[in-house]
Amino acid sequence: MKENENTSNVEIYEDDSVVELFDENEQPVQFREIASIALDGKFYELLQPVEPIDGIGEDEAVIFEYEDVEGSDERNFTPLFDEELLDRVFGEYLKAASELDCDCCDCEECHHDGETCDGEDCDCGCGCHHHHEH
Image (tube, one colour):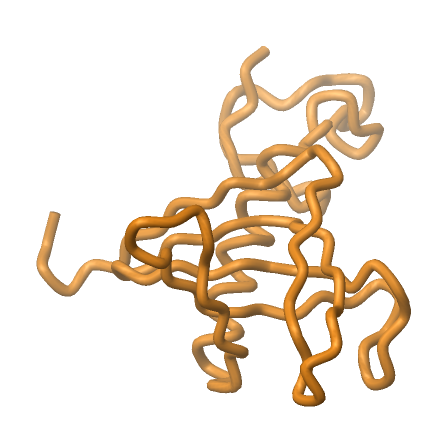
């Protein structure tokens, strides 16, 4: 691997694990853990508020950088504000989510005029970017 090559690893949570953080007024706020993303040696968490929060839409999530607290099960979370980094982290999540949720081979659009894709990358627009296995 090249030194400047980006590396990432994404874990998408399928259970409803919840993490409790504290707002600027030291009030507890619960977030549903959506995914953990390791990118370039740092760790990020995609979190969705359990209860509505002003400024965050019902279908939106926030991204925090986190570090494990040595000697405990706790983590320190820091909100991420860098737009470029937010885009990169969220892009890694989207890529992993699309691979996990891909039903491409069952997609109506993948069956061009009654024929299935021939194992080449399909450009049917379904969002899947892997080789089809038929």
